[in-house]
Image (cartoon, rainbow, N blue to C red; front, side, top):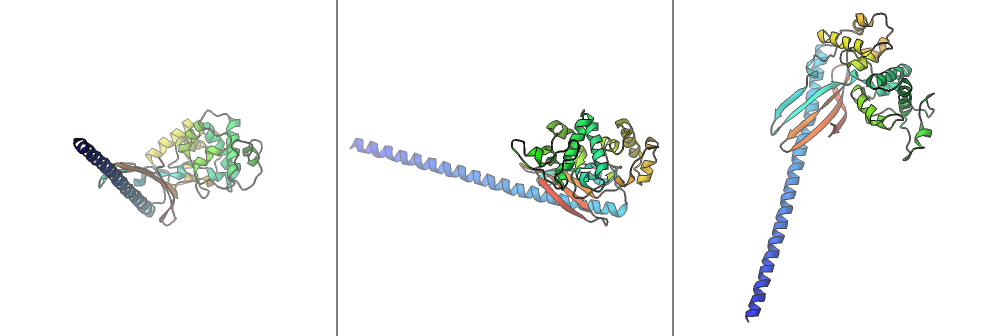
Length: 309
């Protein structure tokens, strides 16, 4: 009898332990599910804040166009936001004038040869690359985005080169949608791409360089014979007062006597990138949105990326 009571007690203890284990497991899974659900909600909340930033920046750019016809780094849209408090978190970010950068897709535009020469100069200005290597990278980049399958002589590359790689792949034969595509181009490496990344963009139409917002290496690339020291001097000049016209820019003493195509330059811009980070509670979301502003000031988002920083 005592033995039977002992077995019954042991069985009861095992049942209680099993129920406790199952209960603990269910409680753990429930807590994980609740935590995951909370994260998803916070993530969506942060995303909607990012969408709100797009609209906010669009309105700032619209008002800017109403007030003036030039764009410079002294204007309100160009001032970074280090900390903007929101309910449960904060927003930080900045707006970048993409026409202050070299548009890779200009290589297949109406002035492709001038764009090619400029890109060769830019590659050399931002790196220690020699002229032959810079030319090979530039010509291969043009072959990547132009519609034909004929390599640009003497150093371009089309499918016949890329199909011999392992793994093999083909050229896009269309304009780039993002500068990250440049990583696939013959002659490009991680170090060179990193040096170029801040000075290049990929826009859906051919664009001119805004001389009021372009950094020194981009300004130095616009024509043969302009070095970084001269370009830095131009940057210092515009800090005192932005140029109201391309003609005023070309008449500066620094550029006197140089042959520069004014058609490739501008003092106003249509393409901008709003980038930043939204933090809500324990969730943080980075974003990068490319906006196009029309002649009347209205803006539209043409590309949006999450976790892009």
